[in-house]
Length: 145
Image 1 (spheres, rainbow, N blue to C red):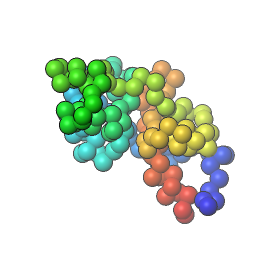
Image 2: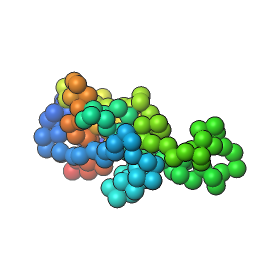
Image 3: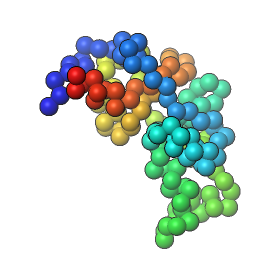
Image 4: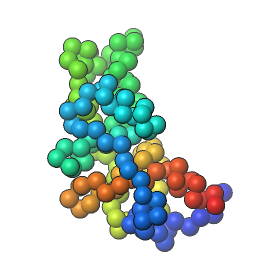
């Protein structure tokens, strides 16, 4: 079991030591562009930004479901529609995504990441501007020290 106590650490303190950038795409990015960005950054999570504000999340599985929809035997209406018109990140994104705020306990953030199966969780300012990200790999690495 991991012995590190994260309950006394807040997000701001963690980010001062472990500054990370989130993978972001514009609201009008195509699914191919999003997939390329995820692959180039070795990430499972991309956050959709519009006017410097994070407005949604795209997971790798969601992106590949749209890119490879034609190879599936059963299609949803959205997948059929995406074969006619190329969807954008803004159309496919999940607008109800998990995030962290600066004053939160790191323990709460870890729980949220594990519960929502998000490797990279964005940290947002009060106006929803992107401040950075917390990556599970960094938390695990710190726990093993």
